[in-house]
Image (cartoon, rainbow, N blue to C red; front, side):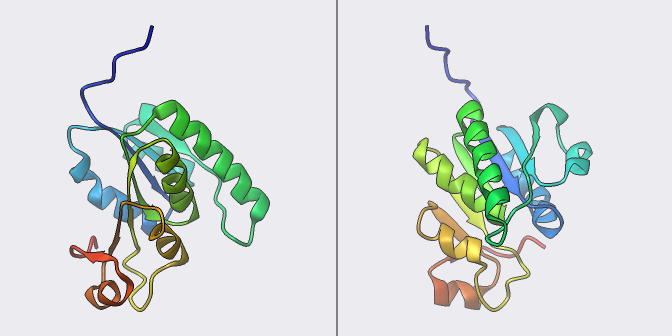
Length: 155
């Protein structure tokens, strides 16, 4: 017998550590009323969010293909087990992978590029443009030239 879907939406919030994580925490009030699962690369961030909905992934990038593969496998498992209605990422590689994987499961997706990218989109944001439902940029001029959306700055 199939389990009934919860009435609250499920959000998977994925980011790398450091500034990406800070930006995720800054947008987290937007998730009010949802069951939020936070995913990051830093175990020490667990105390900042609800512990039973905190997950870690290995930090990886295009220059570490084995680590990137391990990260992708963990994200496949997370998306398959959490079954999010939406995935939101503030970057970087793990966030892009989560968006890519979540689309295969039918989730809505949003990538918010880092405030640090004042002149051009990050690689993860550029890749996300091809698969995410929405890609937001925190700089109006960059948004104008890239096809992303500007809705203000997080920091």
